[in-house]
Length: 79
Image (cartoon, rainbow, N blue to C red; front, side):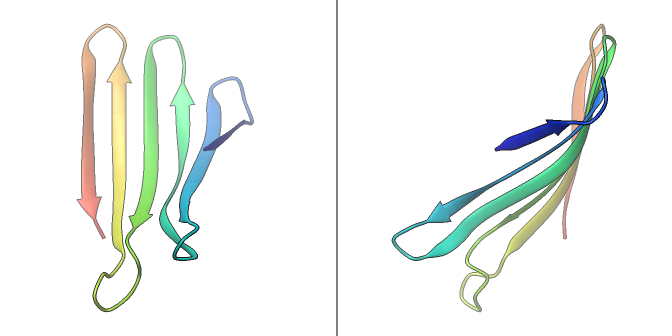
């Protein structure tokens, strides 16, 4: 995957997996991240599957947050 930091705390990221044998993308993801001394938060969109009638795309959006002194949690929803 690739990450581009456009500020001291903010960055965008993304990546993909490609099946060379079948000539198609298997999964893709993109998101935005905030990272500072006290916390880290990420919002990520993922898409996987073949995108066919037999195997439709599975899409998900996930939000995760980590408070460095307390702990971490995340929430995800299928689209």
